[in-house]
Length: 72
Image 1 (cartoon, rainbow, N blue to C red):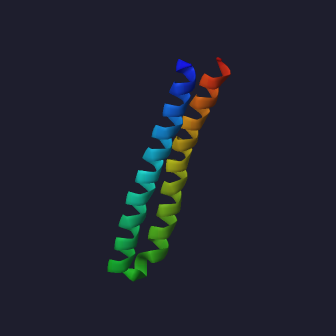
Image 2 (cartoon, rainbow, N blue to C red):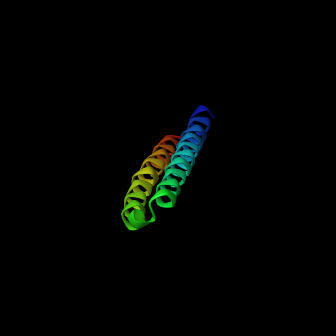
Image 3 (cartoon, rainbow, N blue to C red):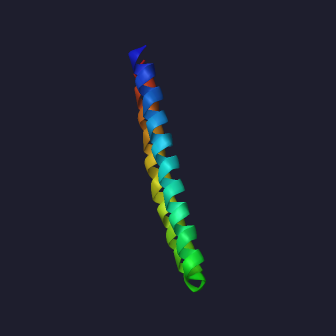
């Protein structure tokens, strides 16, 4: 029972953190592009790389949850 709750908390915190991080990064990228439209391509490229790193951390949370559920 406790392991299942731990797995749920791991996925929840990872998803919440990833969502908040992506929202903040996306908002700041839109602000940067709005202020200087000529650097839009560079900002977009860096934003996609940042999103990949954030999503990787979220997937690590899911992996930990799978490892915890495997112990049941």
